[in-house]
Length: 95
Image 1 (tube, rainbow, N blue to C red):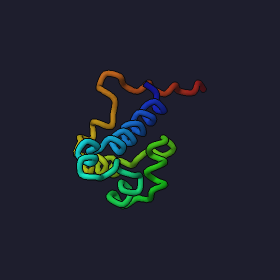
Image 2 (cartoon, rainbow, N blue to C red; image 1 turned 90 degrees about the horizontal axis):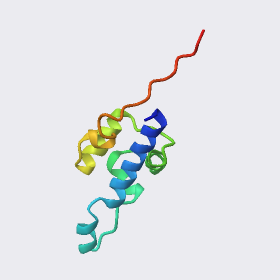
Image 3 (cartoon, helix red, strand yellow; image 1 turned 60 degrees about the horizontal axis):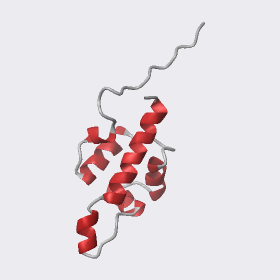
Image 4 (cartoon, helix red, strand yellow; image 1 turned 30 degrees about the vertical axis):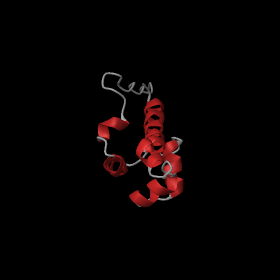
């Protein structure tokens, strides 16, 4: 897995959590899925920031991952692929 793959994985996980967060419960009570604005307000960031996380334009900072995990009630590790996939090491430039 490359660094870009990891970035896309984290982006997909954030989007997935937001769009599926409590759906069954929310539908029964007349609520809709969370918007990017809902997440942004809860985390104290801008809606554009949440959008950029979800489209892999920006990486969330470690503290933002912690806040996302706390908000969605998941471990921080859930944002990362299962262990064993690893990230491919960078190739060093030859002198």
